Image 1 (tube, helix red, strand yellow):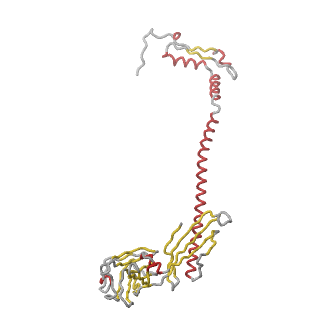
Image 2 (spheres, one colour):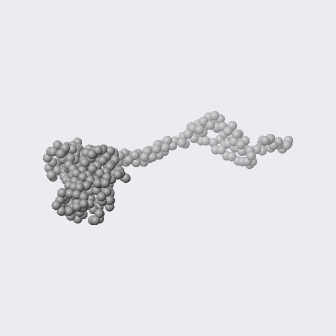
Length: 353
């Protein structure tokens, strides 16, 4: 863009431009520390010439005056670092308080976790000690006994589980209302993945079956749509229901005949079998075959070497020497079953509290 040309003779005389009046300018070379500063008065009569006035004013100041002005400006900023430091201290204090509280909570949580872990290990040791006593036929007091494991006081009790109680709980019947029946039952595993139950009547009168089945140690499934032999009790009495139930670390296979006319009757079938397949194909270490006769006055027959118990181990942490000074406790309850003859017991169920 070209500058606008001013016609000749129209130039504004320099003397008529706005001037900057500086009082005390004569003493500008004598300015120093403790000397009063000159007062600047700016009178603008024509605003477009303001830049020229500023330029003329700066020219009047020598290097010493500019240096003094800069020192004065720097001296006016004293105390800013202190304010910044105070702000940082306040922010740091707020953050530090929250951080320390969080760290304190973490330490307390870690102590509780460590204590509960030690109690769990001690209670588990109590369970294993009771199992060892059962395996080696060592006397266990009926009211329990105590151990000390890793400075934890452990109290262990064993409530025996006999076969009758085990089966009545599995079948959901009242153990007070049953008596031994005259059905003779034998259960065996002839090969991996196959169970065979033989049922015979040994009574003088007549008997009928309401339930028959077997409990096997381990988790297994029933093989559907398998061939049923002609002499099988399910072929002779097909009006039945089947139930597979997980119970006490094992699996129960239960066949039920609900109606009286269609129940297996000893007059027609004094001897019968029940054979089925299951997966995976293995031979369980434990098995209990059973039959049940009746619903109200239950007659129960079973076959299998079985023994077990419910073991309860409680590990306690004390905060003092008195018995009542208990800080925390961890209890483990385990169900143990096994063969009486071989003294082989397995833990089949755990509960931690």
